Length: 112
Length: 114
Image (cartoon, rainbow over all chains, first blue to last red):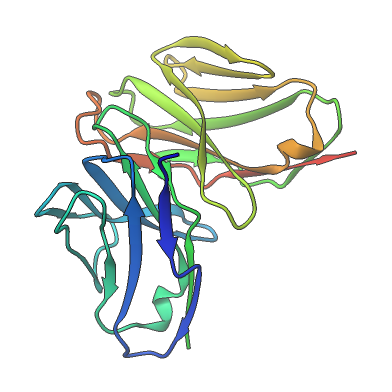
């Protein structure tokens, strides 16, 4: 079955370090999204992509970057991790812009 | 004002109860809505997807949209302990849905007690 997987599921790191979270989908979806989920804020969009070589900033993009070199993957990089970036990160994909998004099971990131 | 608002709960009901979960929104220029269910330590999963106004039914679940009052509801009949989860409503950021981006409510946490 097609799916979307995130890795790692849990990560602890220190402030100032670079961190990359992986997202891989096997649906061949063009659209991919990264969200963070925090208590009191719900899901907030970080970055998104409509296809290979396309990336766009979302609502809370500062301190994050993404790259899209193929259809299946959209890695999320924290250039210099900050404690405020401690959160649960979700990746999602959709076949097209009027189709629902399907989510991975998240990466729980703690920055000490 | 947030664009999509939900009461975070928690909402606790006995097994078998009818549950009503609600969202209000501030911008009426869009065509479809979604309800996602999220179990603890899992990603959101699409529960229902409905266009425009009116009702949509799927088993024990009914989604209702009232565009005149900007109100979205999810009803769960004969609630089960397995329905215990956080329920998120979502809508596209633009009326045509062309961007594919969604705005989510904070989610309502539901606990169904046996």
